[in-house]
Image 1 (cartoon, each protein chain N blue to C red):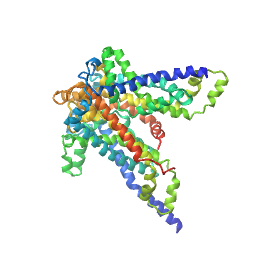
Image 2: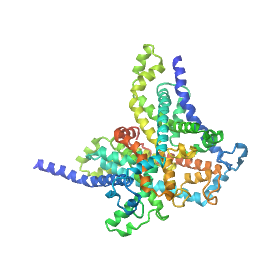
Image 3: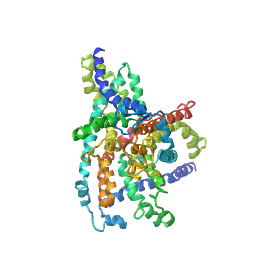
Image 4: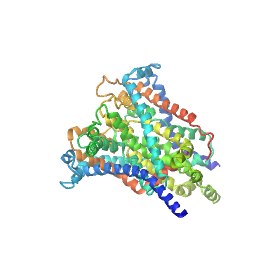
Length: 302
Length: 290
Protein backbone atom coordinates (compact mmCIF):
# COMPACT_ATOMS: atom_id res chain seq x y z
CA UNK A 1 0.00 0.00 0.00
CA UNK A 2 2.86 2.36 0.82
CA UNK A 3 4.27 1.85 -2.63
CA UNK A 4 0.85 2.65 -4.04
CA UNK A 5 0.79 5.98 -2.28
CA UNK A 6 3.83 7.24 -4.12
CA UNK A 7 2.44 5.89 -7.33
CA UNK A 8 -0.93 7.56 -6.88
CA UNK A 9 0.85 10.87 -6.33
CA UNK A 10 3.06 10.41 -9.36
CA UNK A 11 0.08 9.45 -11.52
CA UNK A 12 -2.37 12.11 -10.42
CA UNK A 13 -0.32 15.23 -9.68
CA UNK A 14 0.62 16.26 -13.26
CA UNK A 15 -2.94 15.86 -14.56
CA UNK A 16 -4.53 17.59 -11.60
CA UNK A 17 -2.08 20.48 -11.70
CA UNK A 18 -2.53 21.16 -15.40
CA UNK A 19 -6.26 20.72 -15.19
CA UNK A 20 -6.62 23.00 -12.18
CA UNK A 21 -4.42 25.72 -13.63
CA UNK A 22 -6.42 25.80 -16.86
CA UNK A 23 -9.88 25.36 -15.44
CA UNK A 24 -10.29 25.88 -11.70
CA UNK A 25 -8.23 29.03 -11.22
CA UNK A 26 -9.37 30.78 -14.45
CA UNK A 27 -13.05 30.03 -13.77
CA UNK A 28 -12.82 31.65 -10.34
CA UNK A 29 -10.92 34.62 -11.73
CA UNK A 30 -13.39 35.08 -14.62
CA UNK A 31 -16.32 35.23 -12.19
CA UNK A 32 -14.37 37.76 -10.12
CA UNK A 33 -13.45 39.85 -13.17
CA UNK A 34 -17.04 40.06 -14.33
CA UNK A 35 -17.79 42.45 -11.44
CA UNK A 36 -15.00 44.86 -12.36
CA UNK A 37 -14.42 47.43 -15.02
CA UNK A 38 -11.19 46.50 -16.83
CA UNK A 39 -10.09 48.37 -19.93
CA UNK A 40 -7.18 46.23 -21.06
CA UNK A 41 -7.23 42.48 -20.74
CA UNK A 42 -3.65 42.58 -19.42
CA UNK A 43 -4.32 45.20 -16.72
CA UNK A 44 -3.18 44.21 -13.23
CA UNK A 45 -5.72 43.96 -10.41
CA UNK A 46 -4.70 47.37 -9.06
CA UNK A 47 -6.12 48.98 -12.21
CA UNK A 48 -9.49 47.25 -11.96
CA UNK A 49 -12.38 49.29 -10.58
CA UNK A 50 -15.30 47.63 -8.88
CA UNK A 51 -18.45 47.86 -10.94
CA UNK A 52 -20.89 45.57 -9.14
CA UNK A 53 -23.46 44.22 -11.57
CA UNK A 54 -22.68 47.15 -13.86
CA UNK A 55 -21.11 44.99 -16.58
CA UNK A 56 -24.15 42.76 -16.73
CA UNK A 57 -26.56 45.71 -16.81
CA UNK A 58 -24.64 47.46 -19.61
CA UNK A 59 -24.45 44.22 -21.56
CA UNK A 60 -28.15 43.54 -21.40
CA UNK A 61 -28.83 47.14 -22.44
CA UNK A 62 -26.51 46.95 -25.45
CA UNK A 63 -28.56 46.33 -28.57
CA UNK A 64 -25.75 44.43 -30.30
CA UNK A 65 -25.41 42.09 -27.33
CA UNK A 66 -29.18 41.60 -27.23
CA UNK A 67 -29.02 40.76 -30.91
CA UNK A 68 -26.21 38.27 -30.27
CA UNK A 69 -28.25 36.57 -27.54
CA UNK A 70 -31.30 36.47 -29.80
CA UNK A 71 -29.21 34.94 -32.62
CA UNK A 72 -27.70 32.26 -30.42
CA UNK A 73 -31.14 31.50 -29.00
CA UNK A 74 -32.52 31.07 -32.52
CA UNK A 75 -29.58 28.84 -33.44
CA UNK A 76 -30.17 26.77 -30.32
CA UNK A 77 -33.92 26.36 -30.86
CA UNK A 78 -34.26 26.18 -34.67
CA UNK A 79 -30.95 24.45 -35.19
CA UNK A 80 -31.68 22.08 -32.32
CA UNK A 81 -35.06 21.22 -33.80
CA UNK A 82 -33.58 20.65 -37.25
CA UNK A 83 -30.49 18.73 -36.12
CA UNK A 84 -32.17 16.52 -33.53
CA UNK A 85 -35.15 15.90 -35.82
CA UNK A 86 -33.19 15.11 -38.97
CA UNK A 87 -30.62 13.04 -37.08
CA UNK A 88 -33.39 11.02 -35.42
CA UNK A 89 -35.02 10.42 -38.81
CA UNK A 90 -31.70 9.26 -40.30
CA UNK A 91 -31.02 7.09 -37.26
CA UNK A 92 -34.49 5.52 -37.54
CA UNK A 93 -33.88 4.76 -41.22
CA UNK A 94 -30.41 3.35 -40.62
CA UNK A 95 -31.47 1.02 -37.82
CA UNK A 96 -34.17 -0.57 -40.00
CA UNK A 97 -31.98 -3.30 -41.57
CA UNK A 98 -30.59 -1.00 -44.22
CA UNK A 99 -27.95 -2.33 -46.59
CA UNK A 100 -24.70 -0.36 -46.49
CA UNK A 101 -25.45 1.04 -43.05
CA UNK A 102 -21.83 1.58 -42.04
CA UNK A 103 -21.09 3.31 -45.34
CA UNK A 104 -24.02 5.70 -44.96
CA UNK A 105 -23.26 6.54 -41.36
CA UNK A 106 -19.57 7.07 -42.11
CA UNK A 107 -20.38 9.55 -44.90
CA UNK A 108 -22.98 11.41 -42.83
CA UNK A 109 -20.54 11.73 -39.93
CA UNK A 110 -17.68 12.82 -42.21
CA UNK A 111 -18.13 16.65 -41.84
CA UNK A 112 -17.27 16.27 -38.14
CA UNK A 113 -13.69 15.29 -38.87
CA UNK A 114 -13.13 18.15 -41.31
CA UNK A 115 -11.90 21.52 -40.08
CA UNK A 116 -14.87 23.83 -39.52
CA UNK A 117 -13.01 26.55 -41.41
CA UNK A 118 -12.67 24.27 -44.45
CA UNK A 119 -16.30 23.14 -44.15
CA UNK A 120 -17.63 26.69 -43.88
CA UNK A 121 -15.43 27.79 -46.78
CA UNK A 122 -16.94 25.11 -48.98
CA UNK A 123 -20.44 26.32 -48.12
CA UNK A 124 -19.75 30.04 -48.36
CA UNK A 125 -17.53 29.99 -51.44
CA UNK A 126 -19.38 27.27 -53.30
CA UNK A 127 -22.86 26.22 -52.17
CA UNK A 128 -24.16 29.71 -51.42
CA UNK A 129 -22.23 31.54 -54.15
CA UNK A 130 -24.60 33.61 -56.27
CA UNK A 131 -22.90 33.16 -59.63
CA UNK A 132 -21.52 29.61 -59.81
CA UNK A 133 -22.91 28.24 -56.52
CA UNK A 134 -24.57 24.87 -56.05
CA UNK A 135 -27.98 26.19 -55.01
CA UNK A 136 -28.25 28.71 -57.83
CA UNK A 137 -27.19 26.13 -60.43
CA UNK A 138 -29.39 23.41 -59.01
CA UNK A 139 -32.57 25.46 -58.80
CA UNK A 140 -32.14 27.01 -62.22
CA UNK A 141 -31.52 23.54 -63.64
CA UNK A 142 -34.83 22.26 -62.31
CA UNK A 143 -36.51 25.50 -63.34
CA UNK A 144 -37.27 27.07 -59.95
CA UNK A 145 -35.93 30.48 -60.89
CA UNK A 146 -37.35 32.23 -57.83
CA UNK A 147 -35.32 29.95 -55.59
CA UNK A 148 -32.31 30.19 -57.86
CA UNK A 149 -32.27 33.95 -57.46
CA UNK A 150 -32.03 33.94 -53.68
CA UNK A 151 -28.92 35.80 -52.53
CA UNK A 152 -27.96 33.50 -49.69
CA UNK A 153 -25.22 35.69 -48.31
CA UNK A 154 -27.25 38.91 -48.23
CA UNK A 155 -27.95 40.18 -44.75
CA UNK A 156 -31.60 39.05 -45.04
CA UNK A 157 -30.71 35.42 -45.68
CA UNK A 158 -27.31 35.13 -44.10
CA UNK A 159 -28.61 33.84 -40.80
CA UNK A 160 -30.44 30.99 -42.50
CA UNK A 161 -27.46 30.20 -44.68
CA UNK A 162 -25.34 30.02 -41.54
CA UNK A 163 -27.87 27.85 -39.76
CA UNK A 164 -28.35 25.37 -42.61
CA UNK A 165 -24.64 24.89 -43.26
CA UNK A 166 -23.85 24.52 -39.56
CA UNK A 167 -26.66 22.01 -39.02
CA UNK A 168 -25.58 19.93 -42.02
CA UNK A 169 -22.30 19.13 -40.28
CA UNK A 170 -23.80 18.54 -36.84
CA UNK A 171 -26.39 15.96 -37.93
CA UNK A 172 -23.84 13.13 -38.13
CA UNK A 173 -22.75 13.25 -34.52
CA UNK A 174 -26.28 13.36 -33.17
CA UNK A 175 -27.36 10.61 -35.54
CA UNK A 176 -24.69 8.33 -34.08
CA UNK A 177 -25.88 9.15 -30.57
CA UNK A 178 -29.47 8.27 -31.52
CA UNK A 179 -28.33 5.05 -33.19
CA UNK A 180 -26.47 3.94 -30.07
CA UNK A 181 -29.70 4.45 -28.12
CA UNK A 182 -31.98 2.72 -30.61
CA UNK A 183 -29.68 -0.27 -30.89
CA UNK A 184 -29.84 -0.81 -27.16
CA UNK A 185 -33.60 -1.33 -27.32
CA UNK A 186 -34.02 -5.07 -27.71
CA UNK A 187 -35.59 -6.35 -30.92
CA UNK A 188 -38.07 -8.30 -28.75
CA UNK A 189 -40.24 -5.23 -28.27
CA UNK A 190 -40.58 -4.73 -32.00
CA UNK A 191 -41.27 -8.39 -32.68
CA UNK A 192 -44.04 -8.40 -30.09
CA UNK A 193 -45.50 -5.19 -31.49
CA UNK A 194 -45.25 -6.58 -35.02
CA UNK A 195 -47.22 -9.65 -34.00
CA UNK A 196 -49.84 -7.40 -32.46
CA UNK A 197 -50.13 -5.64 -35.81
CA UNK A 198 -48.39 -2.36 -35.06
CA UNK A 199 -46.96 -0.74 -38.17
CA UNK A 200 -43.50 0.85 -38.47
CA UNK A 201 -44.69 4.32 -37.47
CA UNK A 202 -46.68 3.01 -34.50
CA UNK A 203 -43.68 1.00 -33.37
CA UNK A 204 -41.46 4.03 -33.67
CA UNK A 205 -43.92 6.27 -31.87
CA UNK A 206 -44.94 3.92 -29.07
CA UNK A 207 -41.72 1.98 -28.46
CA UNK A 208 -38.69 3.84 -29.76
CA UNK A 209 -39.56 7.37 -28.71
CA UNK A 210 -40.47 6.72 -25.06
CA UNK A 211 -37.41 4.53 -24.59
CA UNK A 212 -35.17 7.20 -26.08
CA UNK A 213 -35.80 9.77 -23.37
CA UNK A 214 -32.35 9.31 -21.85
CA UNK A 215 -30.68 9.62 -25.25
CA UNK A 216 -32.74 12.72 -25.99
CA UNK A 217 -31.30 14.20 -22.82
CA UNK A 218 -27.75 13.41 -23.94
CA UNK A 219 -28.48 14.93 -27.34
CA UNK A 220 -29.92 18.16 -25.94
CA UNK A 221 -27.01 18.62 -23.55
CA UNK A 222 -24.37 17.89 -26.21
CA UNK A 223 -26.13 20.28 -28.59
CA UNK A 224 -26.32 23.02 -25.96
CA UNK A 225 -22.62 22.69 -25.13
CA UNK A 226 -21.71 23.03 -28.81
CA UNK A 227 -23.92 26.10 -29.13
CA UNK A 228 -22.35 27.73 -26.06
CA UNK A 229 -19.02 27.56 -27.92
CA UNK A 230 -20.48 28.76 -31.21
CA UNK A 231 -17.89 31.03 -32.79
CA UNK A 232 -16.04 29.96 -35.94
CA UNK A 233 -19.08 29.78 -38.20
CA UNK A 234 -20.24 33.20 -37.17
CA UNK A 235 -16.79 34.66 -37.69
CA UNK A 236 -16.51 33.06 -41.12
CA UNK A 237 -19.87 34.37 -42.26
CA UNK A 238 -18.98 37.91 -41.13
CA UNK A 239 -15.19 37.97 -40.87
CA UNK A 240 -14.15 41.49 -39.92
CA UNK A 241 -16.91 43.33 -38.13
CA UNK A 242 -19.85 42.05 -36.11
CA UNK A 243 -22.87 41.76 -38.37
CA UNK A 244 -26.26 41.93 -36.69
CA UNK A 245 -27.60 38.93 -38.57
CA UNK A 246 -24.84 36.55 -37.51
CA UNK A 247 -23.29 38.02 -34.36
CA UNK A 248 -23.21 35.62 -31.38
CA UNK A 249 -22.08 36.22 -27.77
CA UNK A 250 -18.53 34.87 -28.23
CA UNK A 251 -17.97 37.05 -31.29
CA UNK A 252 -19.20 40.02 -29.27
CA UNK A 253 -16.88 39.01 -26.45
CA UNK A 254 -13.95 38.74 -28.84
CA UNK A 255 -14.53 42.32 -29.91
CA UNK A 256 -14.93 43.38 -26.28
CA UNK A 257 -11.51 41.90 -25.50
CA UNK A 258 -9.53 42.85 -28.56
CA UNK A 259 -11.52 45.63 -30.18
CA UNK A 260 -13.42 45.76 -33.47
CA UNK A 261 -12.34 47.60 -36.60
CA UNK A 262 -14.75 50.35 -35.70
CA UNK A 263 -14.64 51.42 -32.05
CA UNK A 264 -18.19 52.80 -32.18
CA UNK A 265 -19.67 49.32 -32.36
CA UNK A 266 -17.98 47.78 -29.36
CA UNK A 267 -15.76 49.47 -26.80
CA UNK A 268 -12.98 47.40 -25.28
CA UNK A 269 -13.71 46.08 -21.82
CA UNK A 270 -12.38 42.81 -20.43
CA UNK A 271 -14.77 42.90 -17.46
CA UNK A 272 -17.81 42.68 -19.76
CA UNK A 273 -16.01 39.96 -21.70
CA UNK A 274 -15.77 37.97 -18.49
CA UNK A 275 -19.43 38.66 -17.77
CA UNK A 276 -20.35 37.14 -21.15
CA UNK A 277 -18.44 33.99 -20.19
CA UNK A 278 -20.34 33.81 -16.91
CA UNK A 279 -23.69 34.32 -18.67
CA UNK A 280 -22.98 31.49 -21.14
CA UNK A 281 -21.79 29.20 -18.38
CA UNK A 282 -24.84 29.86 -16.23
CA UNK A 283 -27.11 29.23 -19.22
CA UNK A 284 -25.53 25.80 -19.67
CA UNK A 285 -26.07 25.02 -15.97
CA UNK A 286 -29.72 26.10 -16.20
CA UNK A 287 -30.33 24.07 -19.36
CA UNK A 288 -28.63 21.07 -17.78
CA UNK A 289 -30.89 21.26 -14.72
CA UNK A 290 -34.05 21.89 -16.74
CA UNK A 291 -33.35 18.98 -19.05
CA UNK A 292 -32.63 16.70 -16.10
CA UNK A 293 -35.85 17.71 -14.42
CA UNK A 294 -38.12 17.61 -17.47
CA UNK A 295 -36.75 14.38 -18.89
CA UNK A 296 -36.49 12.36 -15.73
CA UNK A 297 -36.38 8.77 -16.89
CA UNK A 298 -38.09 7.44 -13.78
CA UNK A 299 -40.72 4.94 -14.81
CA UNK A 300 -38.84 3.35 -17.67
CA UNK A 301 -36.36 0.61 -17.12
CA UNK A 302 -35.03 -1.47 -19.94
CA UNK B 1 -50.59 -19.82 -50.28
CA UNK B 2 -48.91 -19.17 -46.99
CA UNK B 3 -45.53 -19.06 -48.60
CA UNK B 4 -46.73 -16.52 -51.11
CA UNK B 5 -48.20 -14.37 -48.41
CA UNK B 6 -44.88 -14.50 -46.60
CA UNK B 7 -43.04 -13.45 -49.71
CA UNK B 8 -45.37 -10.59 -50.43
CA UNK B 9 -44.98 -9.41 -46.85
CA UNK B 10 -41.23 -9.49 -47.19
CA UNK B 11 -41.53 -7.63 -50.47
CA UNK B 12 -43.79 -5.06 -48.86
CA UNK B 13 -41.21 -4.54 -46.13
CA UNK B 14 -38.59 -3.83 -48.76
CA UNK B 15 -40.85 -1.36 -50.56
CA UNK B 16 -41.44 0.49 -47.32
CA UNK B 17 -37.70 1.01 -46.97
CA UNK B 18 -37.44 2.78 -50.35
CA UNK B 19 -38.17 6.30 -49.03
CA UNK B 20 -35.45 5.78 -46.43
CA UNK B 21 -32.95 4.75 -49.08
CA UNK B 22 -33.88 7.78 -51.17
CA UNK B 23 -33.19 10.15 -48.27
CA UNK B 24 -29.86 8.47 -47.49
CA UNK B 25 -28.75 8.43 -51.12
CA UNK B 26 -29.67 12.11 -51.58
CA UNK B 27 -27.79 13.10 -48.43
CA UNK B 28 -24.69 11.11 -49.34
CA UNK B 29 -24.78 12.33 -52.96
CA UNK B 30 -24.88 15.92 -51.81
CA UNK B 31 -21.86 15.34 -49.55
CA UNK B 32 -19.92 13.70 -52.37
CA UNK B 33 -20.92 16.36 -54.85
CA UNK B 34 -19.80 19.11 -52.49
CA UNK B 35 -16.41 17.50 -51.85
CA UNK B 36 -16.05 16.47 -55.49
CA UNK B 37 -16.75 19.98 -56.71
CA UNK B 38 -14.22 21.50 -54.32
CA UNK B 39 -11.64 18.92 -55.47
CA UNK B 40 -12.42 19.74 -59.11
CA UNK B 41 -12.25 23.47 -58.42
CA UNK B 42 -8.85 23.02 -56.79
CA UNK B 43 -7.61 21.54 -60.07
CA UNK B 44 -9.08 24.15 -62.37
CA UNK B 45 -8.50 27.85 -62.86
CA UNK B 46 -10.18 30.82 -61.19
CA UNK B 47 -11.67 31.83 -64.56
CA UNK B 48 -13.19 28.36 -64.97
CA UNK B 49 -14.66 28.50 -61.46
CA UNK B 50 -16.41 31.79 -62.19
CA UNK B 51 -17.72 30.62 -65.55
CA UNK B 52 -19.11 27.52 -63.82
CA UNK B 53 -17.10 25.03 -65.87
CA UNK B 54 -15.27 23.31 -63.10
CA UNK B 55 -16.25 19.76 -63.90
CA UNK B 56 -15.18 19.85 -67.55
CA UNK B 57 -11.41 20.21 -66.96
CA UNK B 58 -11.19 21.89 -70.36
CA UNK B 59 -7.75 23.28 -69.72
CA UNK B 60 -6.51 20.10 -68.06
CA UNK B 61 -5.60 19.49 -64.46
CA UNK B 62 -3.88 22.39 -62.79
CA UNK B 63 -1.69 20.66 -60.26
CA UNK B 64 0.32 23.83 -59.94
CA UNK B 65 -2.50 25.23 -57.75
CA UNK B 66 -1.31 22.85 -55.09
CA UNK B 67 2.31 23.80 -55.50
CA UNK B 68 1.39 27.48 -55.29
CA UNK B 69 -0.78 26.97 -52.20
CA UNK B 70 1.84 24.78 -50.54
CA UNK B 71 4.78 27.08 -51.22
CA UNK B 72 3.72 30.68 -51.81
CA UNK B 73 0.52 30.70 -49.74
CA UNK B 74 2.43 29.21 -46.81
CA UNK B 75 0.11 26.22 -46.43
CA UNK B 76 3.21 24.07 -45.85
CA UNK B 77 4.01 26.16 -42.77
CA UNK B 78 0.48 25.86 -41.37
CA UNK B 79 0.49 22.17 -42.15
CA UNK B 80 3.79 21.61 -40.36
CA UNK B 81 2.58 23.64 -37.36
CA UNK B 82 -0.68 21.73 -37.02
CA UNK B 83 1.27 18.51 -37.30
CA UNK B 84 3.67 19.52 -34.52
CA UNK B 85 0.82 20.69 -32.28
CA UNK B 86 -1.33 17.62 -32.87
CA UNK B 87 1.39 15.00 -32.46
CA UNK B 88 2.96 16.50 -29.36
CA UNK B 89 -0.41 17.18 -27.72
CA UNK B 90 -1.56 13.63 -28.37
CA UNK B 91 1.63 12.14 -26.94
CA UNK B 92 1.56 14.33 -23.85
CA UNK B 93 -2.13 13.66 -23.32
CA UNK B 94 -1.56 9.91 -23.25
CA UNK B 95 1.51 10.24 -21.01
CA UNK B 96 -0.49 12.33 -18.53
CA UNK B 97 -4.00 10.97 -18.81
CA UNK B 98 -3.41 7.23 -19.04
CA UNK B 99 -1.78 7.04 -15.57
CA UNK B 100 -4.21 9.65 -14.28
CA UNK B 101 -7.25 7.69 -15.45
CA UNK B 102 -5.74 4.45 -14.14
CA UNK B 103 -5.16 5.88 -10.67
CA UNK B 104 -8.66 7.38 -10.62
CA UNK B 105 -10.19 4.08 -11.65
CA UNK B 106 -8.17 1.60 -9.57
CA UNK B 107 -7.28 3.26 -6.28
CA UNK B 108 -9.09 4.90 -3.42
CA UNK B 109 -7.57 8.14 -2.17
CA UNK B 110 -8.60 11.45 -0.70
CA UNK B 111 -9.95 13.96 -3.18
CA UNK B 112 -10.71 11.31 -5.81
CA UNK B 113 -14.41 12.02 -5.85
CA UNK B 114 -13.75 15.74 -6.09
CA UNK B 115 -11.44 15.21 -9.06
CA UNK B 116 -13.93 12.97 -10.85
CA UNK B 117 -16.74 15.48 -10.39
CA UNK B 118 -14.56 18.38 -11.50
CA UNK B 119 -13.46 16.49 -14.61
CA UNK B 120 -17.06 15.70 -15.54
CA UNK B 121 -18.27 19.24 -14.85
CA UNK B 122 -15.60 20.97 -16.92
CA UNK B 123 -16.61 19.06 -20.04
CA UNK B 124 -19.64 21.36 -20.07
CA UNK B 125 -17.74 24.59 -19.37
CA UNK B 126 -17.47 26.76 -22.47
CA UNK B 127 -13.90 27.81 -23.32
CA UNK B 128 -14.84 31.47 -23.00
CA UNK B 129 -15.12 30.96 -19.27
CA UNK B 130 -11.37 30.34 -18.96
CA UNK B 131 -9.60 32.14 -21.79
CA UNK B 132 -9.53 35.66 -20.32
CA UNK B 133 -7.40 34.87 -17.24
CA UNK B 134 -5.25 32.50 -19.29
CA UNK B 135 -4.66 35.20 -21.86
CA UNK B 136 -3.79 37.71 -19.13
CA UNK B 137 -1.21 35.39 -17.56
CA UNK B 138 0.36 34.38 -20.86
CA UNK B 139 0.41 37.87 -22.39
CA UNK B 140 1.87 39.51 -19.29
CA UNK B 141 4.62 36.95 -18.90
CA UNK B 142 5.93 37.81 -22.35
CA UNK B 143 6.32 34.16 -23.36
CA UNK B 144 4.47 34.80 -26.61
CA UNK B 145 7.42 36.83 -27.88
CA UNK B 146 9.63 33.80 -28.36
CA UNK B 147 8.61 31.37 -31.06
CA UNK B 148 9.54 28.24 -29.14
CA UNK B 149 7.83 29.29 -25.92
CA UNK B 150 4.76 30.39 -27.88
CA UNK B 151 4.55 26.92 -29.40
CA UNK B 152 4.98 25.33 -26.00
CA UNK B 153 2.22 27.46 -24.50
CA UNK B 154 -0.12 26.43 -27.30
CA UNK B 155 0.64 22.74 -26.85
CA UNK B 156 0.22 23.01 -23.08
CA UNK B 157 -3.16 24.70 -23.57
CA UNK B 158 -4.33 22.06 -26.03
CA UNK B 159 -3.23 19.35 -23.60
CA UNK B 160 -4.77 20.94 -20.52
CA UNK B 161 -8.12 21.62 -22.17
CA UNK B 162 -8.36 18.03 -23.43
CA UNK B 163 -7.49 16.45 -20.06
CA UNK B 164 -11.10 16.12 -18.83
CA UNK B 165 -12.30 14.37 -21.99
CA UNK B 166 -9.25 12.11 -22.39
CA UNK B 167 -9.16 11.08 -18.73
CA UNK B 168 -12.88 10.36 -18.53
CA UNK B 169 -12.74 8.33 -21.73
CA UNK B 170 -9.78 6.25 -20.50
CA UNK B 171 -11.21 5.77 -17.00
CA UNK B 172 -14.21 4.02 -18.56
CA UNK B 173 -11.81 1.88 -20.58
CA UNK B 174 -9.68 0.83 -17.60
CA UNK B 175 -12.82 -0.19 -15.74
CA UNK B 176 -13.22 -3.03 -18.26
CA UNK B 177 -9.72 -4.39 -17.75
CA UNK B 178 -9.52 -7.09 -15.10
CA UNK B 179 -7.20 -6.35 -12.20
CA UNK B 180 -6.05 -9.98 -11.98
CA UNK B 181 -2.96 -9.17 -14.08
CA UNK B 182 -1.81 -6.55 -11.61
CA UNK B 183 -2.42 -8.89 -8.67
CA UNK B 184 -0.32 -11.56 -10.33
CA UNK B 185 2.42 -9.03 -11.08
CA UNK B 186 2.35 -7.76 -7.48
CA UNK B 187 2.85 -11.30 -6.16
CA UNK B 188 5.85 -11.60 -8.48
CA UNK B 189 7.18 -8.44 -6.85
CA UNK B 190 6.77 -6.13 -9.83
CA UNK B 191 6.62 -2.43 -8.94
CA UNK B 192 3.08 -1.07 -9.59
CA UNK B 193 4.35 1.71 -11.85
CA UNK B 194 6.20 -0.82 -13.96
CA UNK B 195 3.13 -3.07 -13.90
CA UNK B 196 1.03 -0.26 -15.26
CA UNK B 197 3.25 0.65 -18.21
CA UNK B 198 4.30 -2.91 -19.02
CA UNK B 199 1.05 -4.81 -18.49
CA UNK B 200 -2.07 -2.65 -18.08
CA UNK B 201 -1.23 0.10 -20.59
CA UNK B 202 -0.74 -2.33 -23.50
CA UNK B 203 -4.08 -3.91 -22.64
CA UNK B 204 -5.74 -0.50 -22.93
CA UNK B 205 -4.35 0.03 -26.43
CA UNK B 206 -7.80 0.08 -28.06
CA UNK B 207 -9.00 2.94 -25.89
CA UNK B 208 -5.72 4.80 -26.20
CA UNK B 209 -5.86 4.63 -30.00
CA UNK B 210 -9.48 5.78 -30.17
CA UNK B 211 -9.04 8.71 -27.83
CA UNK B 212 -5.83 9.71 -29.64
CA UNK B 213 -7.66 9.82 -32.98
CA UNK B 214 -10.26 12.15 -31.49
CA UNK B 215 -7.60 14.33 -29.90
CA UNK B 216 -5.60 14.44 -33.10
CA UNK B 217 -8.60 15.54 -35.16
CA UNK B 218 -9.58 18.13 -32.54
CA UNK B 219 -6.10 19.65 -32.26
CA UNK B 220 -5.51 19.52 -36.01
CA UNK B 221 -8.68 21.54 -36.59
CA UNK B 222 -8.33 23.76 -33.52
CA UNK B 223 -9.16 27.40 -34.09
CA UNK B 224 -10.26 29.40 -31.06
CA UNK B 225 -7.24 29.00 -28.77
CA UNK B 226 -4.83 29.49 -31.65
CA UNK B 227 -6.63 32.67 -32.66
CA UNK B 228 -5.94 34.08 -29.21
CA UNK B 229 -2.54 32.65 -28.42
CA UNK B 230 -0.66 32.59 -31.72
CA UNK B 231 1.44 35.67 -31.94
CA UNK B 232 3.15 35.22 -35.28
CA UNK B 233 2.08 34.22 -38.75
CA UNK B 234 4.77 31.55 -38.79
CA UNK B 235 3.09 29.67 -35.91
CA UNK B 236 -0.43 29.49 -37.32
CA UNK B 237 -2.13 26.10 -37.50
CA UNK B 238 -4.15 25.13 -40.58
CA UNK B 239 -7.54 26.46 -39.47
CA UNK B 240 -6.15 29.88 -38.66
CA UNK B 241 -3.98 29.94 -41.78
CA UNK B 242 -6.97 29.10 -43.93
CA UNK B 243 -9.01 31.81 -42.27
CA UNK B 244 -6.36 34.44 -42.97
CA UNK B 245 -6.19 33.24 -46.58
CA UNK B 246 -9.94 33.66 -46.95
CA UNK B 247 -9.71 37.19 -45.62
CA UNK B 248 -6.96 37.87 -48.12
CA UNK B 249 -8.99 36.52 -51.05
CA UNK B 250 -10.36 39.97 -51.83
CA UNK B 251 -6.83 41.03 -52.70
CA UNK B 252 -5.30 37.89 -54.15
CA UNK B 253 -8.37 36.62 -56.05
CA UNK B 254 -6.84 33.16 -56.35
CA UNK B 255 -9.94 31.03 -55.88
CA UNK B 256 -8.51 27.82 -57.26
CA UNK B 257 -5.62 28.25 -54.83
CA UNK B 258 -8.07 28.68 -51.98
CA UNK B 259 -9.85 25.45 -52.87
CA UNK B 260 -6.50 23.68 -53.20
CA UNK B 261 -5.65 24.86 -49.68
CA UNK B 262 -9.01 23.62 -48.42
CA UNK B 263 -8.23 20.19 -49.86
CA UNK B 264 -4.74 20.15 -48.33
CA UNK B 265 -6.08 21.11 -44.89
CA UNK B 266 -8.81 18.53 -45.12
CA UNK B 267 -6.73 15.60 -46.37
CA UNK B 268 -4.95 14.38 -43.18
CA UNK B 269 -8.08 14.00 -41.06
CA UNK B 270 -9.98 12.65 -44.05
CA UNK B 271 -7.37 9.93 -44.68
CA UNK B 272 -7.32 9.12 -40.98
CA UNK B 273 -11.09 8.81 -41.14
CA UNK B 274 -11.00 6.59 -44.23
CA UNK B 275 -8.70 4.16 -42.46
CA UNK B 276 -10.21 4.35 -39.00
CA UNK B 277 -13.88 5.28 -39.44
CA UNK B 278 -15.02 2.10 -37.65
CA UNK B 279 -12.98 3.00 -34.58
CA UNK B 280 -14.09 6.62 -34.68
CA UNK B 281 -17.78 5.78 -34.98
CA UNK B 282 -17.44 3.09 -32.31
CA UNK B 283 -15.74 5.63 -30.05
CA UNK B 284 -18.75 7.92 -30.20
CA UNK B 285 -21.47 5.36 -29.83
CA UNK B 286 -19.58 3.35 -27.21
CA UNK B 287 -19.11 6.17 -24.75
CA UNK B 288 -22.72 7.24 -24.52
CA UNK B 289 -24.94 6.41 -21.63
CA UNK B 290 -28.66 6.67 -22.19
